[in-house]
Amino acid sequence: MDSLVNGGPYTNKLLLNAIFFSASLYSDHNSLRLAPEDPGTTGKAFYNRFKDLLADYVDEPTMPTIVALILCGSSLVPHGEQSAGWLFCGMAYRMIIDLGYHLDIATSPQTDPNIRLSATDMEIRKRVYWGAYVCDTFQSLFLGRPPTLLKVDCHIPHKYLDTYEEMEEWKPCVDAQTQLGICAYQTQPCYALSTFENLRRLCAVANKIMDKLYSTACSNTPETAALQSRHELRLLLEHWKHGLPSNLRFDPETDNIPPPHQITLHTTYWALVILTEQPFLKPGHFNFGPGPQCQTEAKERCIEAALKIWKLVEAYKNVFTLRRAQYGIFYATYGAVLVMLQHAPQDSEDYIRCIQFFWGALLEYQNGCSKGLKRPLDLLKPLLHRIENVWQRINVDDPGDASQSHSSGTLCNHLRKHSSSEHLEAQESWSDLSCTNAPGLESADSLDWLASISGDLCFTDDTVFGMFMQNDSDI
Image 1 (cartoon, rainbow, N blue to C red):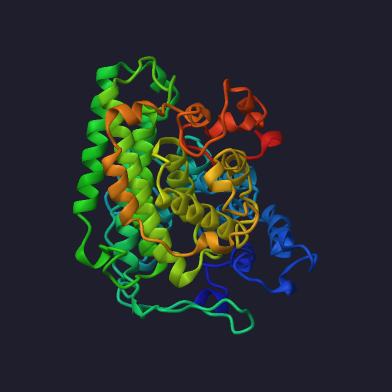
Image 2: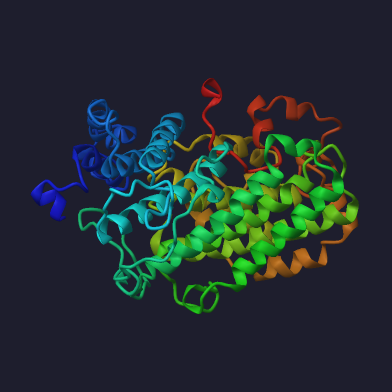
């Protein structure tokens, strides 16, 4: 605020317009739209101004310019401008390296001895770097691209001098001019720093998952090496989970609802569990075929993760709604419903309710601040139409009753009874969902119906890695 009032070094016009653009995407006010009748134009005035100003700031990288590029780039992903978002963030990451934000000024031999930075400067550099690192990691997951800021190249400590945000009370901002209310939330400490630090730790695991299981070299990985990598990644995820401080642990069935960013921490963890297991379920991901026991274990863990995500997203939705949720929630939800459609037994009433809930959640989120993320729903919709028990009881264009609260406990017990290797091996991929022995599905003597679906179904047929890619014309 001091820089804003006095023209200091920590803000500029580019950053202000990035802030205005990002914030406007969470508003329903028509005044923020270029065309009042078109929700897709929300914030466009600020984005256009941002682009006009950018040419004046790229020649001399500064901290506020870096933050502006990251903030605007991140906001463009749910807005449907993934390529622009990736490019803006990439520019920011290179500015970070150019300015040496990845180096510890106090200890690095590469540092100019004449550089003298204040404690405030040092703290801001540290926070900007780690914020960019987290953003880079998850954009790489969402867009299916290699990360730029690797932990091995960083020499920045992750202990913070200023901890005032940790115990600040968090409460949602409710716009009195809208009909969206918040109910059943008890004000709690924000725990901003500890949440972010554990998210940073989770990013380190996510980067290893991408490197070991999703890099271009993975297809040639020997079976023993791939299985060893999966074992090590499982241990890392378990270590992260058990290392969570008590104030960040959350059980949706017994605990009070925490602030949204804390719930996102848990959905992200379970999404990474799915990403760790999916390569061992996808034919052709490796140059070997995983054995039945390996696939059974992977499917069971994926289903467990999907059910955990169900409970977490349900808790989130019941209190905050999903219209303003961070798009990591969307990512985890999509991964969970994909798992349920691919691998879960469908002869259960609770299964239908689970799919109904997930579809309603995705639609509510997409109808909120993420109108640009249409591709994942377009990929799921044809499949839902072919699961008779689902499409007859759900309006795929309106969440309606599909978003009502349901317990996942009964379904969890049902799935445990049906998780034998014989059942799991019977559902190897999307194509098995068309078979006559799958309860509640249309009869099909061949896979001709699959050919009638848009070819882009193949892009996320067995994985959620990179599922926020652009539309066909932009890939």
